Image (cartoon, rainbow, N blue to C red; front, side):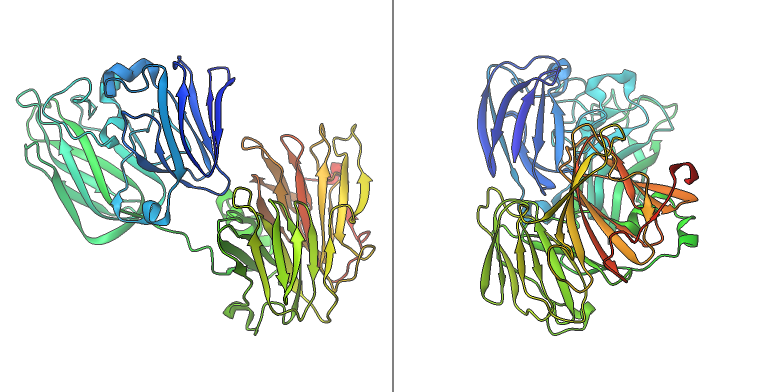
Length: 541
């Protein structure tokens, strides 16, 4: 985990790293300063960025988020002393499963900001009274319950003026399960009136109407059945008086839980007909071919594709030793009963044990494990820098010996040119010129600084499919992975440590916003690397 404090020009003022961060920043915040938090394979953060604000759990699906110090509004909507002075205690850690997925007020986020991205829950609305900070949307999810006044802290609220077309949202960033809501209407009577009815709309379109009284106490809305949703959408605000007057929401509490995605089960992906793929939306294309969240702590993430029966897996042991199991999907007694596999470690040092023999796996080390090996497990050496084992496996018809291949033993094939923006080195790990396998081929291609195409002109190989894992990318970088038939190409935007399934009928190429690396794995009819059908760039459509 890494915490950085940056100024408005992104100059680094402070940095701290560790599994847990509990530190003091000595310095005075200036306009434009921001706190940037990132962690590999961490999505729920427990944070307290200032002693004056509550500790809370936030969801950051990208594994990072930025909090801009709200210097211009501190006196309006934050407790006195927040982010003031020259000593600032900051605490950040990865949330435990109970903290992340347990029952709680899942709408609480005192660190929400106007227009904030990549950090949830997040509140927004179609209107804020006069655009004033004391009426911002985030005020209604910051945990401050005082509601018998209006104006600056602690009487801040979300208000939309005397309007009958208000809409207010709480976005959780992913699906959550909701069982109860509690509303604290602003109760600065007689200045205020109140909403006697508000419609609560869920992501599936279902609407529950909440009925309120003009009181300061919290008013509960208990759902008849727990509801799965990504957002809470408040609409159809009906005031108790006419003509319209002032009404506002001091706080909304949403009780429920974030739903933990089960990444331990083998995910099955069906083969796709190219004629059908032409009609896929961007979302559907990503759903069918992109593989995200490959590396999660102490978990084996596995995707089984019906395209040549390839299995793609990400294995990241930290505290536990992880054993490779067959699962019912393979209908086998053990994983490699009818399969072979290759593995390249893209993380810190780890150990792979094959039928009692340990193999030390340093960063970029590879290994081939042939059919018939029964007991395969993975463990970490340094929890501060855990390994990330990237695995490709396909059916096999005979057994070959285990071979450890570090990157120095891989066959290196320089190709491309600086002028064509595709200068790169192909490191062939599992390859007929390095070792024997049944049909699996696997390697790591590293693209030079200044180049960004992994191959161009592009190609197809109708006898073999391929899976790419893109890596060595910064957070704000991406690869535009090209696929589809040559006369109707598509793209999928890929981020760091995401994999993509590339069918045999599809072109194989991609271009990045800067240089990167990628692991390729192939299986199919043959292992002939010159068995490619190159497509002239002028013929692409």
